[in-house]
Length: 80
Image (cartoon, rainbow, N blue to C red; front, side, top):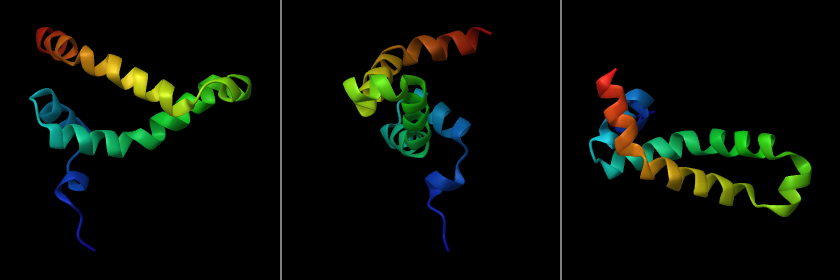
């Protein structure tokens, strides 16, 4: 079975490419990490909040906020 180039690439490499502006790398990274992140959100919300709030909405809002600060994080990593 052949692996796609995105699957053969490490998450760190995808993150570096995404920070460089690659939408393809960002999409591959989100596809790779999305299910785990969603599980984490569901776990942290707990059953009571999950009845009130959609876990996918929380994840989406978090990712939007993270992407808004993507350049800030890249600059901080270059400075360290």
